[in-house]
Length: 503
Image 1 (spheres, rainbow, N blue to C red):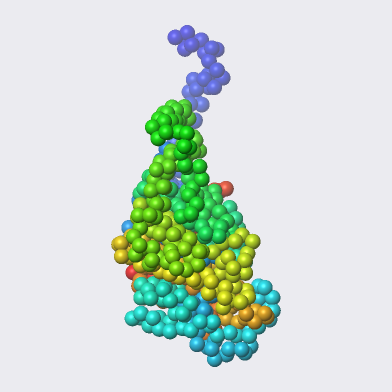
Image 2: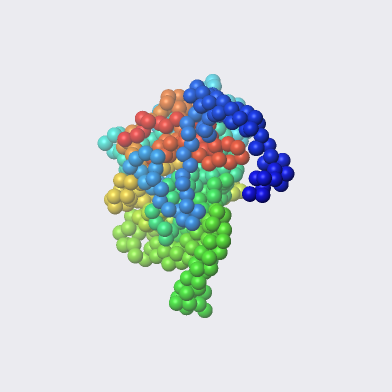
């Protein structure tokens, strides 16, 4: 009461509120401002909500920081719920595998007009016919070379994209582009985007597993399955059938009961600590990752125990009877199937390695002696990969799993000056899909008569990734993450879904 009778006790601002004229003036201006705002909004002249470059509202998944791996709904319903990416670093020669070009045999040994004088690694040589014979396969009569006889038996189930193109002819940038959508490093991988959007069904295993080649990491290393600027929870966890994740084995000096009680105590302490910082997403994410690691101590040894596989499965995959590398890769293929059976959302399986390059010895990069080097890689990859796809089909996994077979670019229809190898070709290469949501026994796009450049229904890497996301029920134009002032997405500002390949 004293304050009301003694205005001098009020602040300057408070005394101004007691001024009737000033009060009416402010009220009038405020009402006019509200009216103007409403009129501007009706005319669409107000600053718009956040939009992607295509003008669509972004869809950012609602992620519980306490459980970042929880399963989330896709943008729209599609058959594919999981994805297996079989990636072949080094650039598989499309003209020696899946892209049949009779003109190469007609011009073998010649150098017709139009062949560039120099390509990625130097001077060019003459046109060379395929190093392996092609013949029709399956009921569709698809022409496939004898280099990959086991995969050739399944062409009626595959959807080939023959007019793929990329923006680079260098391996590290090519791997980055195919697997992250950008040639530069630091961007999230395809698998990270998918698990960011969808989480995973199995809370005992990582949502995204990268199974590296038995010989090591591919050229771009962990960038191929990294999280980039997405939360760390969505990076791929890399291990192989031979090398399990690090630091999961319980020390022999610690009993199972003591180990479990330790885990329970840590959970209580972590929960209490998190209560003090409820809005700290990074803290919650770290706690979630440690808890997942604890659950993996029992789940990973179980899924990696291949002793439960039958002899017929081991024979079908080619675990024995071939090179030692094929045996290791075959075990990786079995591990991939077991992970998918357990509900892991994304499995990326590598066939090829070597950060320093290997000229066809550790990957498909055959700049010389392609007849020997491609044959060596095919012996490792063909039978186990074909068995993996056939096994998944027999078990019903392909009803809800999309399988992607890819490489970063193709190889030239002419030889290098050494006369025994093919150089990089970013203007035409082949990938294939099979499984949930994809047409079977279908070929999309064509390269020219030499397999030199994409000629009909050309597809970019952006289109390819847009299509993969679509097959998983995700709108590539709306799946975004706000980073450095931009609504970032896997396909940057490009990409069109290739609807002709959809079943």
